[in-house]
Image (cartoon, rainbow, N blue to C red; front, side):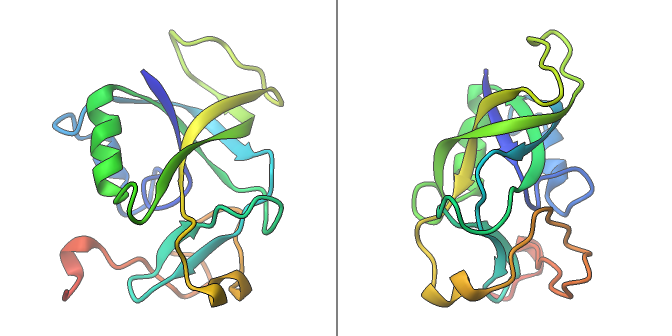
Length: 155
């Protein structure tokens, strides 16, 4: 099992959260909420309003998200879903635990740190570094940039 940190459309209440619980994709177990220890620019970009975490440590904000324990099948699905390694790269990130509910896992205290995989990108338009950054993505946020699902796209 691997730990994955999701910060965008895969979080609970967001457009792709169902994919984390679709057992045809593999197994995923919610462990808790956390925030990146380092700042990163989380921007909404592209014609589909996709949340991108730019792999530029030290810029932006400490990003909030959710930690999941996933099996190899789910990790492989997430690599496919995130177009890894073409659009996103899967790397490890240090997180500060904000809430921990993971049963059967090591018990982590609020404020402690842990490491998980994250999908971030080094491939982006230069102007994205000038876009507003977010610490907590919500497709329905007051930014007015709702995510366009794969099913609704007119590619």
